[in-house]
Amino acid sequence: MFETLNKDKKIFYSGGIALNVNWNRKILDQGFKLSIEPHVYDGGLSLGCLRFLGHKYGIDIKISDFPYVQDDQAPLKEPTQNTLKTVSNLLAENKIVGWYQGHGEIGPRALGNRSILMNPALKNGKDLINKKVKGREWWRPFGASVKEDKSSTYFDLAYSPYMLYTSKVLTDQLPSITHKDGTCRHQTVSSVQNKIFYDLLDKFEAQTGLPLLLNTSLNTSGNPICGTFEQALTVLKQTQLDALCIGNQIFKK
Image (cartoon, rainbow, N blue to C red; front, side):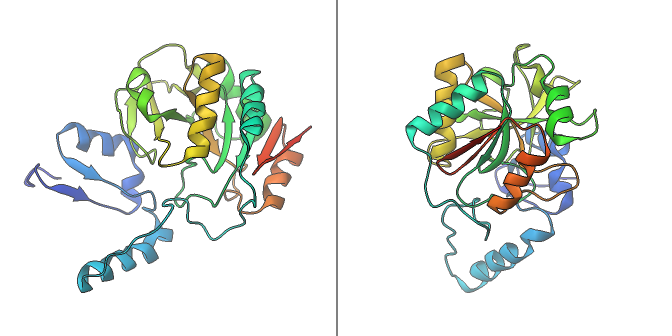
């Protein structure tokens, strides 16, 4: 598809095809400089039009806190270090925890503000989270979020902030996030991109030695990602989710 293009130039592309993580990785591995934004579905058309008009008329369009720009309900308080430690303890105890912080991320991937999190080292973790919370088809894999500075230790792709590429898993210690073909759709997280989520990953690493978590969207099968406290609490109530952290408040069963 891109054989005639200059590999020294960056390629931007969008639309539903850009959600094909295997295709994206093949293009990347051919040496092309590929750039894909997380809002590559119909919901991203408005931002695409804005970017087009900015380029056409020479206007520098800046969107702060991108990609966490959903117009949804956001907690008034951020989690304290004690709250982060408590959530990390729960995850280290192999609990399944809902995670609701700031404004939601645009696009279909959970990127650390509207997530369900779990220890990725659980041997039967995929079946467990499906049975207790997600209710998805058995063959669908789960993604992971990893500290960007540790990504190369666990995956063969060092930078992937929006979960839009497959990567080879470099260890056999992460069965919950390793697909049948030995790959994972992972997200790299930096302290600049999402400090709160990075700090949680950091605390989990301090306890378990693993700087990464299984990360799937905060919703149940067939329902949209939660955008209000009520929706998130409904997931907690109607599933076997062990706990839910909204801002600085933790709800347990």
